[in-house]
Image (tube, rainbow, N blue to C red; front, side):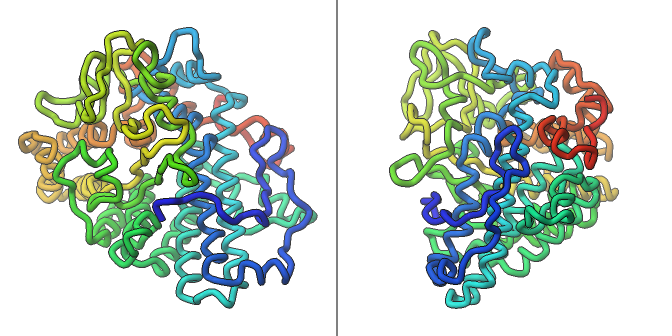
Length: 484
């Protein structure tokens, strides 16, 4: 499963093209013929429909430049970086929190996730028809598709709030389906849909340990439980967070923090779910993910965007091994012997996006760790503390601190432990695409952004705007987020 790339998806009905005016540009052929079904009516054919969903996460519009902008450059952990005159199309706007409904990254993330959701719906539509494929395999594949659909809807609801729930392949001639495509549901409805998908996925998926070595990258039961716990966390359903974290079994903290973000640490004992990059032909890496964040200028290899902020540097305690494992500092030597000369333009770069083997390549072998056991421990600690079980939460927090080379926390009260957990999430998970959403969900945003020299407008910046192209097509069926 390490080599995830699109091998078979020619028959996909692509309802969301990602073009500015084409949210409803649908192929009029909704069904696949009996002859074509027979072509895919085997184990390999069935697997190809789900492989294509994973492949979407390798695309530029899904996981690379726009997503980096929304999830990281907007936050107090990162600055735009690059050269002052290079805006990265809109990364200067995102950094300044001055984006609007026509900002390209706002639109690309929205459309890319719906493109991925369409692939999930295509797979869920066709898999029951492939009766010559192994029944257990088909059941598992449907679980993977539902996990991945839930993953994408979680991204959408965090970014935009309530969005349309597209739970099937739409018929372009159906008024009901047109309304489905263009009518925003409430955030609560989206969360409920995500939870239903994850509960179904949990029932269908095996534990990570049940997969052969070449398929460790696939979604597992543990991944579905961990994502469900995170969905519960965002809704402050504290007891559900604890219960679902307790169901994530068979994982452990990696002994060395830095190694997790190198080839040797991919899909390790701490890894619950990560996006796989390979870089070598014919397998793929994530388009531009490493390159756009690589050191820029003389002696560098990349575009230099998404640079660690001084605010993030200051958040690390003395002796915290995570700082030098997360941040590339100008004038230092990396683990593979590469020297970062003083001639590069920016003082700091994202170490977690670095590829040693394919440094200068557009598609590298860098992975993105989206769910780790460390986060499960921190989610459980946060939930226990909110439930008044502070003394039980503290040892979980200390596991994370001790792995980072730090002493046990001195926090004792519920309020102090809450702040300690929030801080620990920041330094533990920096540049893993969580910080912006964390400060919003915990109510820290106004103060956190002010400390970083940014103005976060309460009542507006909690959500990104819905793309104007979608609002225009909705023609009154959906409205814009507040204050945009």
